[in-house]
Amino acid sequence: MPSDDTLNNSMANVPSSSVFKDDIFRGKVLFCTGGGTGICQKMVEAVMRHGASAFIFGRRENVLHATSSDLSRHTLQRCSYASGDVRSIESLERAVAKCIGEYGRIDFVIAGAAGNFLCPIDQLSPNAFKSVVEIDLVRCFIG
Image (cartoon, rainbow, N blue to C red; front, side, top):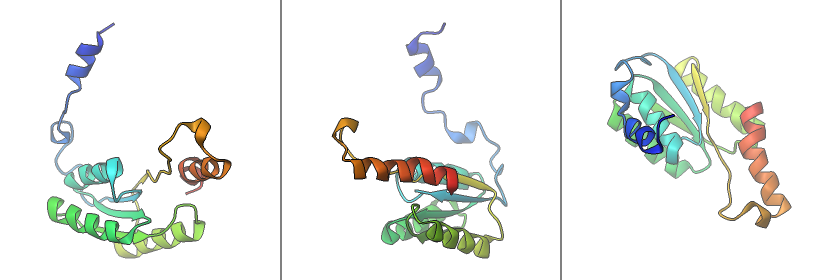
């Protein structure tokens, strides 16, 4: 079995351009919940750099607007957004309808919206736990 050092060195910062054909996602449409920040934003960027258009969905319109503009500028692909709450089926349905209205379809989904609290699980209140499960588990399944 390879050592941890061997595994870490073999996977260190491989640029996505070396593992994908440049335009592998050309003409495709990505819908991403939680795409305004963090790891989901970076996943959206990677897919857009390989040709896809993207639609990001999240709670904070100001963040989504800035991220959408930045992604479009840096990747030269279309990126639009809708704000809402993944815990609301109606909010998700409106976002999906807006995406399909703008792009005609959805080819890929990243269900990345996440709720979390910066504390050990045994310190979560029942309502906080319910919120995390609702966002991270239930909406990924239903949405």
